[in-house]
Amino acid sequence: MRDFNACFEICLNQKNTGKHIFFDNQGNILLDGETNSFISNDMTIKSDAYKVYESKTSAIFISQQNEIKSNFICLKQREILRYLRDEYDLMIYSRAAQLFSWVKSYNYCSTDGTRLSSINEDLSKSCSSCQKSIFPKISPCILVAVLSDEKILLAKHLNTPFFTVLAGFVEYGETLEECVVREVYEEVGIKVHDLKYHGSQTWPFPNQLMVGFIAKAYDTEIKPDHSEIESAEWFDKSNLPTIPPRLSLSRSLIEKALNFLP
Image 1 (tube, rainbow, N blue to C red):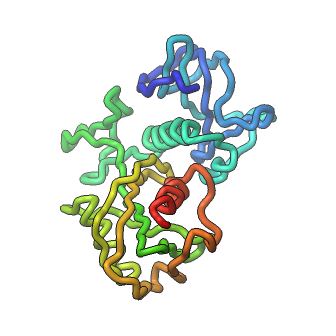
Image 2 (image 1 turned 120 degrees about the horizontal axis):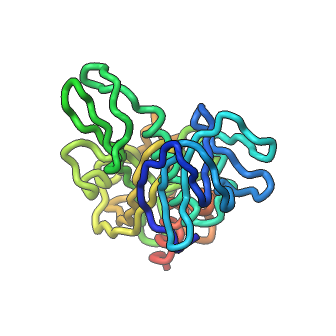
């Protein structure tokens, strides 16, 4: 699977031979119950489809299936996480799910309500009335692991079962670094410095680009914003609470940050 490269090709009313990712008419992913994979093995499907990955020998298509075969299991979007084997699976699923949502769900101009065109090869849709070209939305979001001396700051957000790093969406006119400083202060009342970039990850719930940082705290007094956070505490590496599962950027960010602790 790692030899596939991202692409986009509209394949309407033709036979499409390759691997397929299927969705139902509600946007739910269809899991192949025989293989426990969201990618169905090489086959030929005659239906409207969109090529989203290609290699020298095959391709991956996305398409909607109105008649669901008995071997497929319909899953809500987040339910697929337990079936993803690695970050490469997550990347493929993320691109497929977001493109399918863009193709099927965003059909009217937000300015005047005119029905948009079908998707173009550059992923845009156009409005014949106001002449605008509209592109898929991506929402940048920061994650930050805050360190102080021998401990890491982790927070338990509302309605989540684990402690994790702090996070927030980037606002208009704001850099990623400015967003880190603002979000940490808003959520726990701590000012940070010495930011270090960790990595990024696509996160299709619904359309986020997660960017991870590690930062040092100027002080350690926690003043949590209880409208967003249930609790926040300093932990040492020998006494960690339950943290996010594998594949998530927050998990790898925590693990990397712990390497900076004595």
